[in-house]
Structure formats: structure tokens, C-alpha cells
Amino acid sequence: MRRRKRWGARIALSFCVAALAAAPREANAHPLHTTLVQLTFDERAHVLVGSIRVFAGDFAAAVAKHAGATTPDDDRVTDAAAFAYVSSTFRFTDAAGNPVALQWCGSRRVNDLLWLCVRGASTTSPSALRLTDQMLCELFDDQINIVQAVSGSKHTSALFTKGDGAKSAM
Image (cartoon, rainbow, N blue to C red):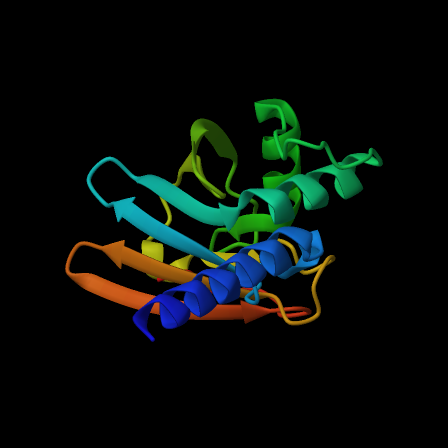
């Protein structure tokens, strides 16, 4: 009886492995369309730093669409193309409505995730800064972009969805 149960379990396991191997690649897609931004503002140095977490495949598709190119098979994009896309979808303005210039400070990949880094200098009080975050919204109607900001002892969060305008950054 034990042999029959083991044999049956092996057949069932083999069937499951074969079914997973034959499943379409779409089954590997993640169900959530989100970015997460960790934003810090150093009031003494007047430097704003954003660390943006994004799924590599989604980001590569958005960068390619922005550049009018095809999505690379390996989900890799150049820093120049990545920054051009980020600059067009993730923007700060000061109290007078002037854009805060951002600089690229690199990226790193961890499995299917990318961590992107941008920074900018602003003498404007962090509470007067406005942020627009429409990353990946051109790809997904259900895109949600979460921003967690820290300035001194102040911690805030903001949520951006497709079509949202500028919101307070801090």
C-alpha cells in the first residue's frame, strides 16, 4: 500500500512539474502594477534623493515605448534611456512652479526589481515642493505609485494613480 501511495505521489508531482513547464510565460507575470519611491530631503544640504523600486520588465517596456523602440529581451536599458524616461514621468516643482532639476545617480538590479536613484538640489522648503509621479501609467490602467517621504522628523506618504496631478511632496 505504501509503495502505491509513493508511486501515485511521484506521478502527481511529475504531472504538476510538466504542467508548470508547459504553462505560457504570462503565468509568470506579477499581478500588481506598482512602484515604490523612498524620498528623503536633507534640509541642511538642500538635497532631495529618490530611490525608486520598479519591476525590471515593466520599466524596460515603458522606457522602450517612451523612446519609440522595441522592448529588449533581457529587460536591460541604458542609464541615459532610463533617466530620460524617469525625467518625463517623475517631476518636482518648487513653490513658484519651477521644475527642480534632477540628476541620475544610478541603478541596481536585484532579480526582477530595479532600484533607480535620482537626486536634486532645492532651496525650497520641502513642504512647498510638489511631485508628479506617472511612472508606468501609460502601460497599466491600474498602476499605483507609492511615495514615502522623510524630511527631518516628518514622514509622509502619497499615492499616485493614472491621471493624478501634482501633490505635496512632503
